[in-house]
Length: 224
Image (cartoon, rainbow, N blue to C red; front, top):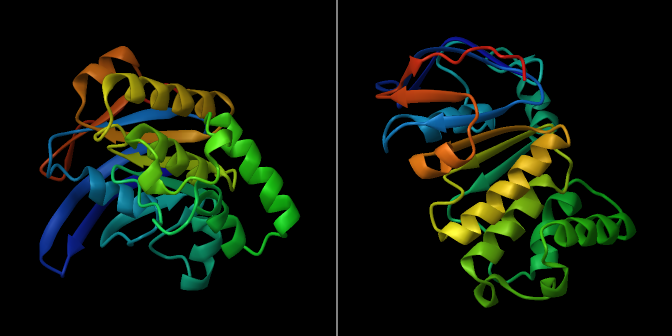
């Protein structure tokens, strides 16, 4: 699913955000990405979501060498990757339904299929009755669940989440983790960046730990 060999990332040709990361995430795994603020978690997620390319080493995502892949091959790959952000990034002028429908419309899906898929996703996250509500009318936990529905409505093979519980209370965070674990149980590979030690203790899984752009303790390849 994901394999990195001495992966590095520089910003502006000078600032070294990641240094010589070697790791493997097998298909269907759940992984924590841990480390303090500034450790490089977001930079690694940007690489894995194909927002940037590595400046050194070799990175394979979904079977593709990201550094060597032609630019035209990246958009289809991105459509197989879901991304959940701490700040939700919902469009305020759109309803919950239309926010979730957006990636399907961008992919050119027919409206009949979109209506069915979006309803299914909103039902899964427990928000079908709120499909007409705009983000300002939703609680933080509800907005994050809409963001998850949007990220997974295209049935991605890989889901990346950057501090997804950072703006949620304990109950909302627990609900979110239940959704992510259920998605993983259904076969999606999930990688969650956090600095919430209590959350990691409650939901134990193999962890990748970053500090100052380096992988401190390479994960054991448990094959899960």
